[in-house]
Length: 123
View (cartoon, rainbow, N blue to C red):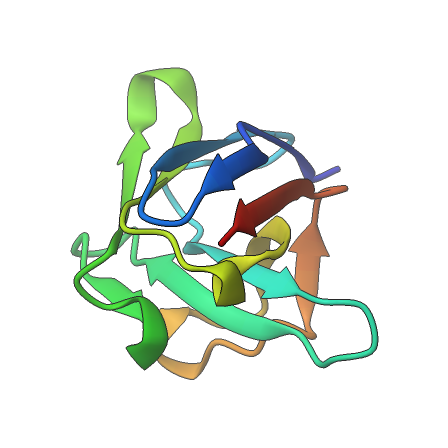
């Protein structure tokens, strides 16, 4: 059974940084692409980033390019999302996801995800 536990969220001022962690278990970590999506109440899920296990390629939605960095630690079965230069519009609950398929056709509505971690960016 896929288990994903997110942590690292919190309240930060605009321009600040946070590093989210996703501890994964219940599957072969080396075989599955892993991503992050975020959701604001009343809005659709937004795929934020994804890391490919086959070649380490990374993917980002346009609004976070240059500010967010996804990485993984295979020894710890953990994926990270380093978020710099945070903006109030980054406020959301952030979820780690093992998507159906892979990063190239990543749809945040299909896959296995954790309970999320709240990020609040104040202006």
